Length: 112
Ligand code: AMP
Ligand code: ZN
Image (cartoon, rainbow, N blue to C red):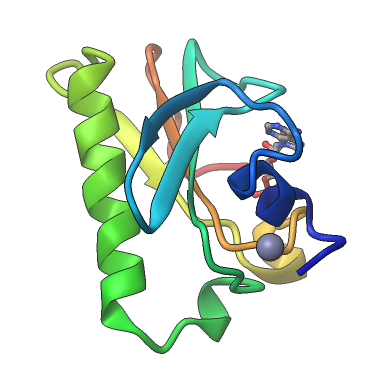
């Protein structure tokens, strides 16, 4: 999708602080971190949201990469949260599927 911010990051047309990359996915630092560790994990292929995914591999790869990045960044033991904001009430602002990996501080529940 030419006008999609995260498609352009996946294509390396817009710079990002990349922390991990696979053939299908990319993980990069959130530009406005909400925790000491805040990484976004995206499929390189465009899906508007989780609601548009019908391939279990896509959802699975994102989850596995989030866990791998947590290990790589040293937060797997202290713990982390993986969130996929979806739709207006979910707080989604960028309409390319992404998971947030948040860690480095105690996270509250329920979320706001
Ligand atoms: P969401 O609100 O769940 O759609 O999350 C979108 C996230 O993308 C927010 O946490 C933003 O801070 C983040 N974001 C927006 N633009 C960029 C960018 N150019 N590079 C990295 N993260 C970004
Ligand atoms: Zn996109």
